[in-house]
Image 1 (cartoon, rainbow, N blue to C red):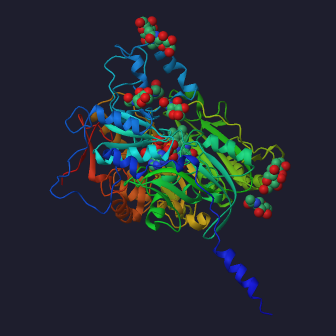
Image 2 (image 1 turned 60 degrees about the vertical axis):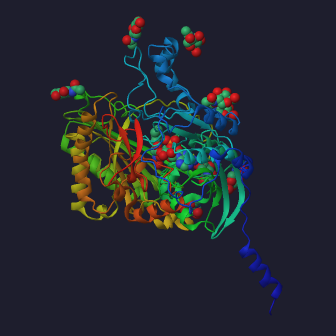
Image 3 (image 1 turned 30 degrees about the vertical axis):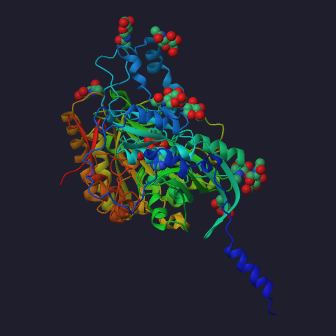
Length: 639
Ligand SMILES: Cc1cc2nc3c(=O)[nH]c(=O)nc-3n(C[C@H](O)[C@H](O)[C@H](O)COP(=O)(O)OP(=O)(O)OC[C@H]3O[C@@H](n4cnc5c(N)ncnc54)[C@H](O)[C@@H]3O)c2cc1C
Ligand SMILES: *[C@@H]1O[C@H](CO)[C@@H](O)[C@H](O)[C@H]1NC(C)=O
Ligand SMILES: *[C@@H]1O[C@H](CO)[C@@H](O)[C@H](O)[C@H]1NC(C)=O
Ligand SMILES: *[C@@H]1O[C@H](CO)[C@@H](O)[C@H](O)[C@H]1NC(C)=O
Ligand SMILES: *[C@@H]1O[C@H](CO)[C@@H](O)[C@H](O)[C@H]1NC(C)=O
Ligand SMILES: *[C@@H]1O[C@H](CO)[C@@H](O)[C@H](O)[C@H]1NC(C)=O
Ligand SMILES: *[C@@H]1O[C@H](CO)[C@@H](O)[C@H](O)[C@H]1NC(C)=O
Ligand SMILES: *[C@@H]1O[C@H](CO)[C@@H](O)[C@H](O)[C@H]1NC(C)=O
Ligand SMILES: *[C@@H]1O[C@H](CO)[C@@H](O)[C@H](O)[C@H]1NC(C)=O
């Protein structure tokens, strides 16, 4: 029987989208009237082109030069911002002789601040300091002088969309360099810049659970998350709402900023995909100063590019809507073993978990390396089951090394997990590595969403350098390719002296689903089985020549990885800011299309960060040529 009423109702519901509303802070927007009363904060027009007869400045304005905005203009900007403009001193200024010297403060910074949230809540600081130029290094009884170096001149403590719009317009109209900072975790100096106005999104802490959200093919639970939310805060929100959201592993990493803009991995990457794969809608202030909602129906090119196509490139994100899932259990097993621990005379990199003391050991170097190789090979089963391996190989001396890994799988029973791991332990025992698999009864699942009550304390500037490669799963299909790849990892640790960090994940297109599968995430991620990196510390205060030498040395080891994995890529967030051929490594075949989106939405090149699409048109001119440094003026590259 023909029932037109049912038919009509179905159509109605199919077209219905329930997307909720923006945060209150997003309703506070810059009006045309505000912009007219102070033309320096007037909106831009991407289609207008430069005014006839004008010359495009070669460099961004520089403090003290004639082109730098006057004090009166900065003051007027501050009034437009309701007083949210800051001119902070670098924190370590307290350690340097002069008017800011304070021994008590310096001592606290050196010994105590890292146990608190000081460095995360501080408007200028970044965890990787070397791009600043080592001009104001944190140390007791520091010598030399403290200058701002690569830290920005001014910071907007953004708490409304108006603040962000006014800052974007002012920087564009006055030719001032613009940077965006959230937590300051970027390893490549992308949240700092000399002579810049910084938009600090850290205090945008809004959060909302949306029980029913539907857009396009998605219908289900979602969360709306402000740009300043950190991973630990997300975990607490998950616990409070009895939901799971994909979030970064590092507790104080931003859940929205650079993580989503580049890919974003976390413990559920093989089950629900990357951070960028979770996004359903994005609110953003674009380079023309306009506030926009970007989603599958609005601004298609920007929607594609903002998910994986680079941080600080297309706009300032104010909030995103992410998929949410029911609570899920995860089960984790740790495995550690070492070789010749008594001969260890090296140091462990700061900032990473140290090897387990008194782990089972062997004195047979070749058995150790064979065991480590078997363990990496075995990870293919872990990721196929929706889990991940998180591992380090530590160089401790010429014939002393340690290996530690954890294997984590969501939604698995303890007996099934034990059965999955058993063959690896048997093989390791055959090599006389005396490891024992925990009994299934002792494997207690933890409720992922219930891992709340986290705190975001304990970060201190460290200067970690990563060199990354996303090793494709195809390597695991070929014993000889795997053997060659593993040898190159071993050489990097044994001969190079680097710590190897390997995270096995498989955020495939299938897992990304809709709308994640159609995004600007580096396509190499979709084929990845292991995100491998060589880690070291960049010493403070080294010369430009020494920094270049260290880069070249590391590039030699990465070159072997590249030869063995042609067409694969690297993860920019845990990659090398001095990566050679970064366009291909970080963006793969999507690079050209991304530059097109960049030109359309930001013809001014207002947003600039190292190794982002279009960034090769500009360079930071440092006095000494320190590679990847931010302590200098940003100028157009003359070809
Ligand atoms: C301790 C630690 C743990 C980590 N753990 C993980 C992990 O588990 N998984 C993982 O994938 N990565 C991890 N990382 C790397 C991390 O993804 C990057 O450091 C990332 O850049 C952090 O982004 P952020 O916004 O927190 O930091 P920031 O340094 O503040 O910003 C990073 C970049 O994003 C831009 N940006 C920030 N906010 C916005 C915004 N609202 N709009 C536009 N651009 C913006 C900045 O300009 C900058 O270019 C870790 C890093 C550290 C230091
Ligand atoms: C901006 O104004 C506020 C409030 O008047 C003031 O406290 C702050 O110091 C000003 N910022 C700058 C950089 O002058
Ligand atoms: C140094 O800093 C401490 C702590 O902030 C403060 O109490 C003290 O007055 C400062 N000393 C000087 C000399 O400014
Ligand atoms: C710093 O100098 C003071 C004296 O001014 C001295 O007592 C102290 O030991 C020095 N600290 C370090 C770490 O060198
Ligand atoms: C930034 O603004 C927030 C909200 O007004 C305020 O609580 C915080 O103290 C400000 N931070 C700084 C460093 O001024
Ligand atoms: C949490 O959600 C799950 C399924 O979504 C449900 O079974 C469980 O009862 C909820 N727990 C609480 C405490 O609400
Ligand atoms: C998680 O594991 C606990 C303990 O085994 C169990 O009681 C609980 O039902 C599990 N929860 C889910 C969501 O699977
Ligand atoms: C460790 O010992 C070896 C010799 O066995 C030596 O060459 C090396 O320099 C030592 N390393 C450190 C950090 O002391
Ligand atoms: C967990 O596993 C069970 C049994 O295999 C399955 O029915 C269920 O859908 C899974 N839950 C999730 C959230 O994947």
